[in-house]
Image (cartoon, rainbow, N blue to C red; front, side):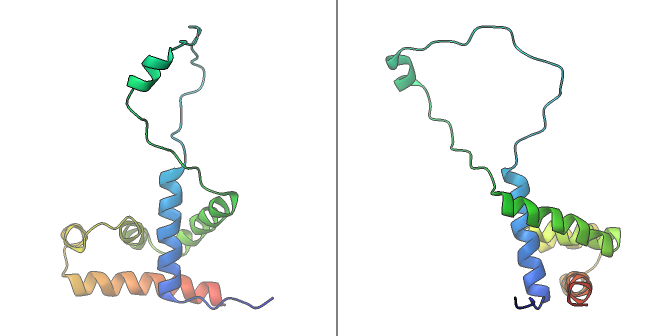
Length: 125
């Protein structure tokens, strides 16, 4: 099996996929509460008049495995770099990121590339 060569762009794409997988996971529910009411039986007319609920897709097991890998990767960089990587994976605009970091766009981009390169070097080692 050929060994994969990691680059900063490949790591960024991996984090973007991990963020999308996180969004597809179901919300955590508080345990211990349940409903004892009987389920409502609706007529065909009631079902036809209801608003359509958006389809919810669940991530594949392979996507969840890749998500768990990225959780291990973020431990290799500093906390500020983690926030920057996840912000870019979530497609937060550079303007908001630079406001939080207190630097210009070029410096923020350079820090983001540096953090991704740290992870890529560690993966290639």
